[in-house]
Length: 233
Image 1 (cartoon, rainbow, N blue to C red):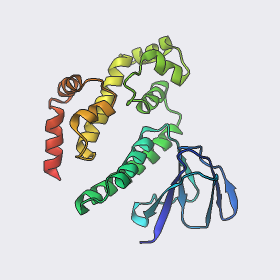
Image 2 (image 1 turned 90 degrees about the vertical axis):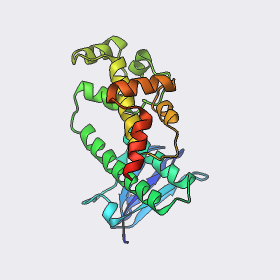
Image 3 (image 1 turned 120 degrees about the vertical axis):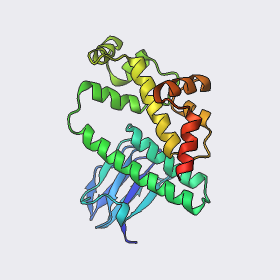
């Protein structure tokens, strides 16, 4: 199929980007640039740098993409996009049905990243901003209220106050977001990843505590959710 867009990323280098000869703001290292294929794109990479490139076919490319779009690494959906891309490379070759599922997940995650970007630009509330920031660090098993507050440039007391105004606590929000991320991974992630590892990847230090919290939240064990997802494929 005709290419609809390019996803470009320099994992450890800055990029120079020009479309039809006009210089564009280059993405920061690690960030992803979504580039339309309607015109000529010139990409300049530092000597010795590495470039990750994905060509999106027209049905998978976002519609009405007229100019490059930057997708920052700070977005959790962008991190998931990179994870899926890496898994496609590391775990190849795939069975046709697994490859189709991974391609579909990649496309859905890209759309999620674009939705998050649009939402971030729509002047989110303070608690929404904290929620987005938390999504980016869920996998940090050592995350504390004080450490999170430093990352978002606020005092720990202020972070507590923002959550308390909604009847929430930092710990409860962090746990629920980790559980939601784990459930999504169990339902749609690669089946080769062990259930216990899913919990660890989502920030839980202990597999048994992860299973206990998951069952309390969803009424099912993580293993049951994984089996149900695999049976539905």
